[in-house]
Image (tube, rainbow, N blue to C red):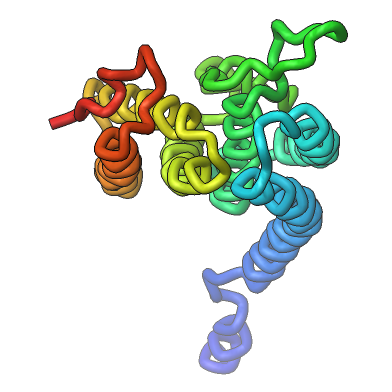
Length: 260
């Protein structure tokens, strides 16, 4: 009798509750739903960014006199980016930032790049007015200005919410130097050597600025190391202009190396 009682009670001594896995499955499903929802918004953002990048690529065949109309189209495209980023901000801020930020980080870098390039070419200028016809070129849009333009906070430390990080800004800045190093020789082709010299000075200053940063991100440090090749590329353009006597007056020092 005692033996039979023990045998019937044995199944009830299990320590593993099957409901634990049901709970885990629900958590996994919830996480996947969040990721899918974020992916849909990010895909829309990527499409908006690709449109603006396509517009910006036309700068390599655009005279500076045509920049106002050209930049108006770019700014309109950036407004579409801002709208989608607003939706991403609202959705992402409901969840732990560092759990999902890898999903949108590259897209945000690309969006920042479009703002930086547009700003450098003279768009998005806070000093522009309705009476101004000439864009203010050569300006570096700061990370705070980028946050203001995209309507999201930057480098948050006091709360767990969607924001632009310093690393994302610096990655975009590297992309800017690369794009400007492409523009430098194309500007000469367009008969605008002064723009090439302006680019050389700007890219050299950016590279010098990078040297004072103590970068901990290995991927970012490698990208920043590549900026020296962007500097070399534009310096070669200016050197060739100097040999041909095409350096405008007042730019005699522009061809000097800005880095060692």
